[in-house]
Image (cartoon, rainbow, N blue to C red):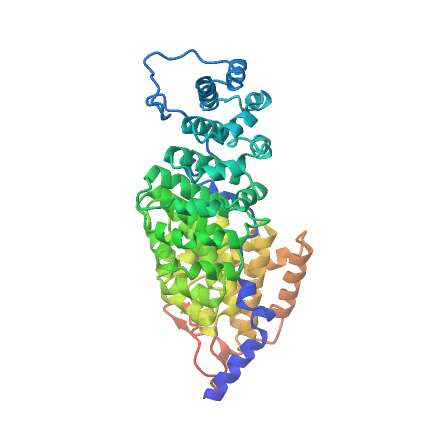
Length: 522
């Protein structure tokens, strides 16, 4: 009867989620995201040096390489850069750039100590001599590719505002080199990043993105944009970076994989925040294309696209729905079986935030066939992926309906779930304990505690709980003790009428839509 059904739902809501709402159950990224960055190609590193290609001249002078010049020493470079003859200035600055462009062990500290940084910065204002501006920018780019102290030498001597001014140079090779230098500076950390933003670099960079921009130049621009949007503690001022969102939406359709990869990385940084930031990204309409990119065969594109989608579903239910409606769940089912362990882990993490949502969202996860591959990850994935799959299961047990929890049990989740109670990672053990407790509480409310307790005992879960009573972590052993006392204590003999039926050799835990006279069928 409807009244009985409502009563059952009300009883469930009385204990479900333990006072948490979906937003609290979703897990944002609090850790430094180093693991996924390891998947980036060298061209996508936070800082990059210009390595000279000796096969073709990169200077606008089209230097004559028929006779290789004798390299200048650092004292000769310093002397030449102090000259009043601009031809000598150019030769010396070019020699400095070539020395700093050496592939192995460039003498960055020696050049800094020799005092060439202030001189190179001075040359950035030689607008009548773009070749000198170019060589000086290149030298500074390579110095800023080094350590924080080396980058600091470029910043402290006043390079940032002058490099920002060069972004509007009529000479594209000069503007491009300034973009590269600023990208290295912004990649040094939040303070340097905010300084570059503070001088208005964002608007100049966006003006450089035109239909005529070369692929090589565009790669540098988008890479620099990504460095201006990345880093947390603190995050960049959102009012200064949100201006790039329309451009990023367009760049998602660019055919170059490097451009696509850094565009996705930038969106992943911008969605790694509160719901207002996520909504600002969603308002540009990027979600359908991001979800499409989950089909990419290029790991360098797939990785940040998945990271961005994963961040979006940490938002509220409405924001999570945009990913579901764009077809994200079917893609995630495939990614749970990806050969790359890190992709599998990210997919499981993303799903865990969707199962932290409402009953309808959990049902869509089920309808997309995600439970079976999720249980496979729980069974045989690497530990980090298993941990994320455990979160997905626990979130489902916290917010799912009785039917949904019963399906989870029927598909065989209990055994691999209980196996994680042996984990050396106490946080994972706590996640599993929470999930089992949710499941047992639901069974108790529905009058099915005996059946579920037997299933947990049969797969070794009770033995593991008893073992956890000796765990060194106080929270763990206290929770294990409470669960044993609450759900596994000796009671009256089992009523034969409560014995579960069998369907194809498995216990039938399909829930009914109402509470029959004989009790609620879990």
